[in-house]
Image (cartoon, rainbow, N blue to C red):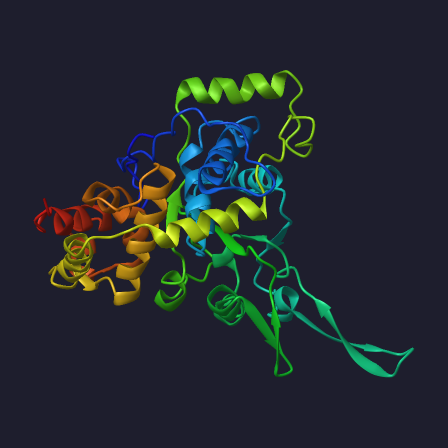
Length: 349
């Protein structure tokens, strides 16, 4: 598996998303061992590619978040297959998925569920909202007011929702894949820092290059229907058991004290940058540890290297940073500031 170079904040010159791993192996058995779970999860990329062209990086990001029990923020202009991507991943993983279109009039109960009065029993019963699923696609999350955005915080952090004082567990696995449009801000509500910090990764879906765009058009000319993934030939090559086995193995991936110190030093370097008003918090440092572990495991290693940390640093940390107004006026980008901070930290040998 080749090392990825993650795209962090979506300027036109941003680096490309991670390169595809080596050809995936056959899917694992129903009770997967560590190697079988890894092969099955890598095979998901090949299945998703039957419907989505050129977005292997985003598939990798979703798999990393599932393994590390996190959530992913997908950013891209309309029409780069963000919705199709999540649906295809869910089908390849044989898990349930639901989509919520976030709008200015969406209420918290429309997501979490609410109590409904049953006239037959003269009692209130709980009707589950769309959050009770495995992969929740929060489409255009920045188009709904903060009150509704905040309704996802408990679900994302505690994997439960509380209605009328009663907590209700969400199914496992559970992942929020939120999308936002980076070029249209009229009528939007930017996500607050507290909620951005809950997303393990931010993955930018770029416009595909010419050859991949030709492949997309050719598929549609041949009769491809994005609403019918079964006709595209996407098979369920992995499942919740593979994700559970993989997550257990990821937690066993070793990290040397000097690599742990390297992660902390990168986080501290962002806090000392004169261009940033907000650096990486300790939660961000632990997030980088989690994503580096997942990437190391996907590469077949039982330990984290500094290259793993650098490979995931931009996608894990960039959305947690805030530029000072004067830096924005000078045209400084978050990606360049983070790159400078990472370069200032000596790499352990």
